Image (cartoon, rainbow, N blue to C red; front, side):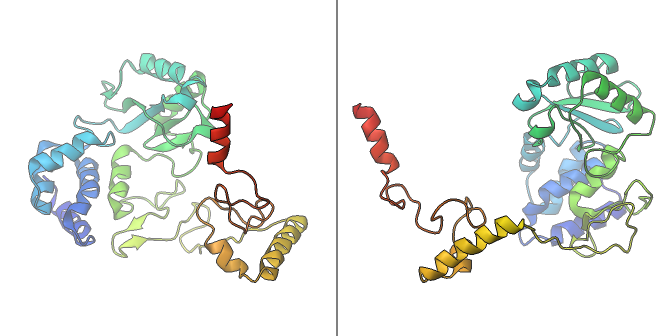
Length: 294
């Protein structure tokens, strides 16, 4: 069962949501932060907090691969073996680590240090093959690189990932994933233990900070910049829209999620629906019919 302190924090999490069951995923992370996996007692307590059945909670806990039903090691090593990573050697990376550690998928080393898993797409295909430690990405790793990474993790000195924190261990990360931010006992050291995550007291996100910037760092907004030539093209495109009697901002704002900034192509501000493109080009349907008839 959750400690008295975590029980109070769990109740705070539930109170954030208009519908209590929406807090189930954060609560399961909180259970893992304490116990290292989703225990039977944890399932019972989540069900009680949310007014759900144990079957409902158990169904969620076994549906998502991020929730484990057996104890995790101190660190979770994940190797993406999906397509982009696999064609760039991820299977060799996984096989090397499996052999080195003497464990298979979702198994933990005898010393309790590492749990190994092969993962589905980690959303970082340009960095394939990707290995994560406690969900932080290390990109473009060879089997030798991956082995060196694991050695450093076991030695207690993991290198900085491609982005994010130096992996502090899976339990502190599970605590963060619950939406509570860094643990109260997390050291604010040069490993970035207090980078900006959701803050329980504020009920939302706190500004992201880097380890070098210090605790008083301010968030700086970044405005997109274009070359002079590109900016001239943008202004010409907007002027063409004005001359057509329309507001460029309204046109750009209503262009839809597939649009890019002005200009994307000739007469982009005009309708681009099939059969209604500028210049009277054939519709996609008409072209398809012509291909079939041909």
